[in-house]
Image (cartoon, rainbow, N blue to C red; front, side, top):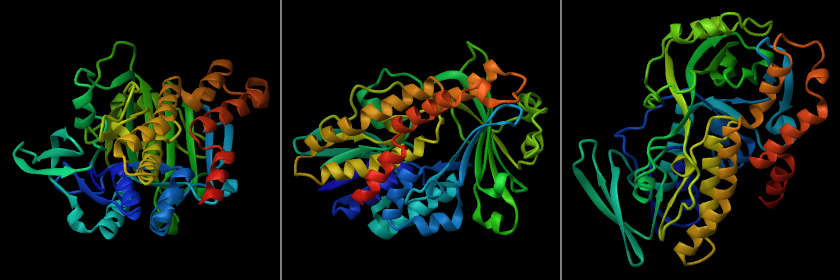
Length: 416
């Protein structure tokens, strides 16, 4: 079976490797002329690392990123609300990694080149259209100037071409722009001192003003430093105009730093970290409404093309990786691609739609808002503000929703 994947992002490359390992003939077509290690930090949950580890990539991930020990939630005064061990520190068979997104992209690319061969990954080819003809799909690709490059026939087409997916738009031409709840993110990377043990991820503040930070570089850690990935979220007010998403849009300190000037914790000087970044990027927090279907005949969607979601709970990339495993398993069950793609959709669309919906309602971050509402000046006893039973329920519900709960992951370990 010949499979075309449009998009060489995290989801597309993971799917390509999973499919190739299962014996499929896979080709990947990417719009940009060259993949470069761009971006800032990203977290890969243990359940997704399980898949990357099975592809032989864990040693490279461990040599590049930070094995996350703990996820800590705090209020805007730096007081801990909840601290949760992650990955192997939680007794799971796999780690969680915090890593530079560009470094992860290159690890996936080099892994895919080794498995598929360099000629199977074609750059400078944006999907411009496709047609289904009987038992095949014919896809047309163009270069950055819109000039035709080639036409390819295959048994299956997977649209892994991101939040502005051309494959998705073909089936939903009137969908419009992504959805925005008026929250802007400013992101940067700063070299600083290790904090909270040197391998902790922190989310501090509340829904309308939040600071996220975590170290992402093993090389810096070995020098006694921390390469700190940080994100500042601010609600811009109802009715604010949605700016175009562009990961290269420069951000201005004056637009957000004043709101964080007082965030000097005993474990981190937040304004100093922000000022220490060599570059700052501005990006709106956006998603799309869940679709009624992903699969149409021999064409389906994967990753952000299928289920773009707000970056709450570190789920975007991890869910794309889970998609790659799922589509491979379903296509491996039989010779009917259309039935397999429908099973893949039925398996993955409902849980990802629930995550999209939950993240719009703040997801696990709801604990931050509860504490802010009940104790805006801080607390002397967390139990008096957010009783343990209420907190544990919030955490357990979200973990189950995202398939990150211990029971689900240990079942997967037993099946591996």
